[in-house]
Each structure stands twice: as structure tokens, then as C-alpha cells.
Length: 134
Image (cartoon, rainbow, N blue to C red; front, side, top):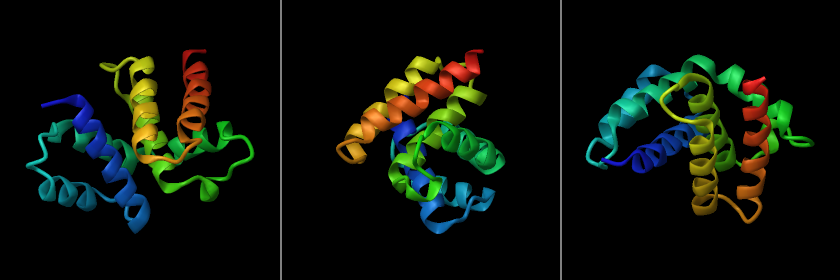
């Protein structure tokens, strides 16, 4: 099972949570149960999902701080989901380097986001990574 597939599933979970405005443990568990045959590491997806449930305000605060000229409401839901997952990894997962989180987020943005998404995601995450290292 691939971490790349698991990260993809975690992004889809974050997107579903954003669309439904349901950032709950029950939503995380239901998503994992519905997608258990997707070759994802369900523990990784659940862990990242729980980080979103427990730390959404902190994640959104960092996104707001570094998405110059863009309010949370103006950022596409896909880009927002990708940013939340990557920042949760950078803040709360010591087993993943910040550069890997950023690179994987940019790849997700290339796959699912708009034309400008990769550069936007990279810029925000680079700034967040710099703050975390200080």
C-alpha cells in the first residue's frame, strides 16, 4: 500500500469534509469504512483526518496568514483540502519530512487543482514550512 495513495485518499476526505461542512470523527470513520478497498493505509488516512478534526482552526489560520490576498472562502475547495492535509503533516507527523509533504501536495494540486494551483500550494506551504522551522 502506497503512502501516495493514502495521501490522495486523505485529500478526498478533507474535500468531503469541506463540502459537507462536517469535520467530525464520525465523518472520518464513515469515509474510511466506505473506502477501505482503495489500497490506502487506513491508519494514515484516519490519523490525518483526526488532525483536521482537532486542528482545523490552526491549519486555517496558517493558510490565511500565507495566502496573500486570498481569504479561506475564496480558495478553491480542492486547494484548501490539499493545503490542510500538507500542513497537518508538517505540524503533526514527525515521520514525514516537510519537503516530502510539500512535493506531494504540489503533485496533488497538479492532478486535481486548477492551472495556478501547484504554484499557489507550493508558495503557501513553503512559507508555512519556513515559519515552522523558525
